[in-house]
Picture 1 (cartoon, rainbow, N blue to C red):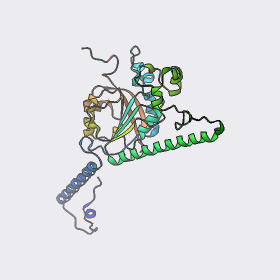
Picture 2 (picture 1 turned 90 degrees about the vertical axis):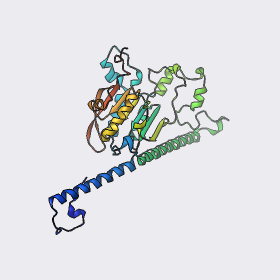
Picture 3 (picture 1 turned 30 degrees about the vertical axis):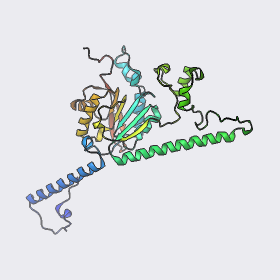
Picture 4 (picture 1 turned 45 degrees about the vertical axis):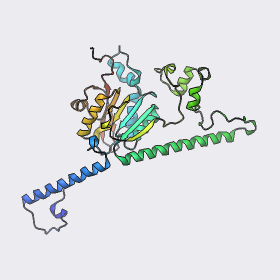
Length: 329
């Protein structure tokens, strides 16, 4: 809040009579009270109030910083966890893989969500944002990205047909029509195909980037390389502090701009959630003080904000899911 002097606030000139010390204090107090009320009203209008009140400000890590975090999360067991308890078997789902689910609380314009989806190819990637205008922009951008992808695939298919020998073309269209160069068939086609019709398991893993920890035969649905790069991406306008739980394996929060009220409410929801990995820009003593005592920091990553400020991202694990930490009844 920038305090405006009495003469400026009243539009008076420099020759206006000086106010007494008591009157000046009263005038400033009234002004500050009005300004705080204005800011609070603006925050309510832009956000949702409730648990998000006071956290409507905007901030984000740079894409370079997000990329560092993604690489670390993709190799968390090898780089960090295996050195903590070498004799314990860490769940492969601690790594950020195509089988992971990811949520960004306070997702803003959706930059982190789209980056994580394209880089790690997680099966579900959700952004929750309390400010309606930012949520609207994120959804519009997602529609534009999908439109560009569809246009690119259509153009690629047209070029292939133009280069083909039409005189020798089969009566039925090729199996890759509309799926893009090098793309797999549709989900329905692959899901209904028999095991003998699919490639060998090793070839599938190499072609689709399936991590070795995943048993393809144990999946209820065949693991396929999806032609929709943004399948599973979802933006939600809402208040994450009102959720019963956050059913995701990996949770990301750029909480440097979050109010204490929001952090306390989130700590309650996170305490009820069965996540594996949690990334926050708040140190552990804050979360422990707010009641989230089941998290343990395992890594700290130096990051930069888009405002060119330095900050630290803390990678936490859920002790209730970690090997060697289970309480014995």
